[in-house]
Structures are given as C-alpha cells and as structure tokens.
Amino acid sequence: MQKSYIYDRKTGVYLGNGTYSTNHLDEPIIGAYETIEPPPEVAQNRVAKYLDENGEVPTHHGVKNASWVVHYDYKGTTYYTSSGDKAEIKEYNVDIPAGTLTEAPPNNYYKKHNGLAWIYDPADHIIDRCREVDGILSGKFNEHFVYNDNTWQIDSESQNKITARASRALLTSINPEKFVWSNGLNSWRTIDNQDITFSTPEEFLDFADSVSSYCENLWRIAANHKDKVRELTTESEIIEYDVNEGWE
Image 1 (cartoon, rainbow, N blue to C red):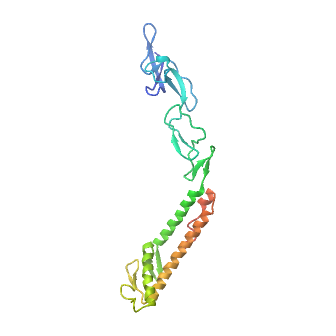
Image 2: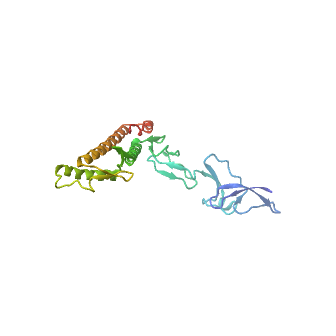
C-alpha cells in the first residue's frame, strides 16, 4: 500500500492522507477525491487545493490536468475598514484588503483607524458618562426627601404634583376668600401613607420651596459634573472622572 492524498469534494482543500494499491500492471487504483500527487508545503494563511484546469474540483486524480494550487486562507477572518465597518472573509483565495485591520477596536469609542492603529473618539464616551450622571440624578429623585421630620417622595411625578399644589397655595395666600385652603388641599401624604396637614398655604409653600431648592441643588450638581466631563479629552481622564462625588 502506498500513500495517497485526500481532498475535499467541494473545495479541493487537502484533508489528509490515505492509501492506494496497484493493479497487475502496477497502475494505481485510486478512489474518488484522492490523488497520488503530494500537496505542496504551504505558509501560514495559505491552503493547498486540488483543482483542474478550470478551477473546479475533479472527481479523480489527474482529470483535466488537475494539480495542487496554493490559495489564500483567511476564511473566517474578521477585518475592519478605516471607517470602522466590520466584515468577514467567507471564501478561500480572498486576501485581507489593504488598509484594513484585523485587530478589533478596544471598545466602542474607537470608531476609525488610520491603517496602523485605532483612533479614540471621546464624543460617545462623554455622552455615556453624562448619561451616567443623569442616572445618578434620577436615582436621587427616587430617594426620599426629609422635611420637618417626615419623609416625602420627590420623583418627577411627585415634583409636578407638589408644584401644582403650591400654585393653588399661592393663589389662596393672595385671595383666601376666593381660593379657600380647605380639607383635601391642606394636606400631603408621606411615603408611609400619613396625611400631614399644612395649616396655612404658607406652610405648604415653605415645604414646596424646600423640595424645589433640594431638587435644584441636585440639578446643579449634575450639570456641574456634565460640564466637567465635556472638558475632558483623553480616554483615561474620562474613565477616571468620579461622577459619584459631591452629591451629599
């Protein structure tokens, strides 16, 4: 028995070795998709394929001047264009396009490359850090506000309702005969469902002003953080900036 070389019936790619025998005339008896011609040594990212003169995979050894050819083997390789578009090589004998990179960007903030390396773009990174600040701000509003030893909700919906009630309290303080400060208007519910009575509209206005001042301070803190983040330019500066500082 002598060594044969098996190739893939669809692609012609060398798969491995087999054996063949000879007949009484010492002619080789070779199976389909098998050849006695050894494949060439191939370098990295190259592949040996057994093809006929038309570039097709022959069923048997030597059909239509079949022989081994060497093709590129970047199949499955992902590369990136200079604009950051991602593509994958899905066929043999396709080279990696010039001016592209096979190295993935370090993160989503590296969107373009110059043919040698990825270029950091701080714009989206700054937006994400500012969104992080907004998330902290929203969380603060969803926490509870203490006023006169009672705890109150100050989420966005509650703020709107407090503002609306404060408008009525202001009208009552201006014209108490027309806008009566009566039951149903002179109380506000705490987070533990206790209705706290505000004896005068001025008392409620003081409460509403305290809520407003507290919220405005949070907005100022958030705005200050975002202004500082927008002044940063390097990736390390943007990563290391502490958006959690100064909220208390």
